[in-house]
Image 1: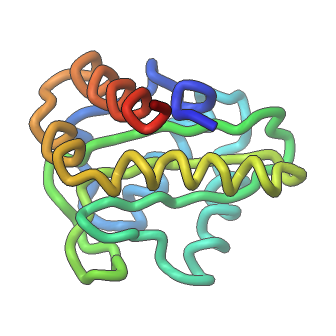
Image 2: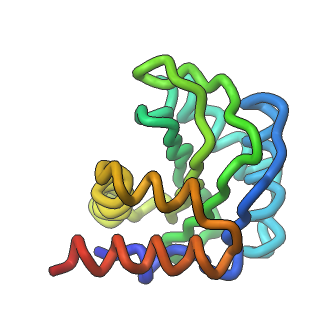
Length: 154
């Protein structure tokens, strides 16, 4: 599975401002709800339940909050780069500034894991993270993400 199969490139946001983790998750869920025509509260509840199991800050300033949402017909992901890193309780203790919100239908077990793996392949590559932090526009970020996705597909 590749990013271009589930990442909403129109929803990429560079320079999002969020004072803390709770505010960030609220904003992400509101934005996803608008894009998907779903209730923001249902998405936030699902993502919040997943966070209680353990933080989704994967290290190197990256977080991938995720969950399975009733009423969703396909795997969906949006990406934001924060204007200022926030504390997130990531595994390495570093603040987070690159965030992928991944949402899947409840029955998407293996596909959900494949989507998580596709994101983690992209963010494990330090030069890609550097390019993501340096990209100044949505189009530039999309190009970096697509380039990384194609590199991993090769």
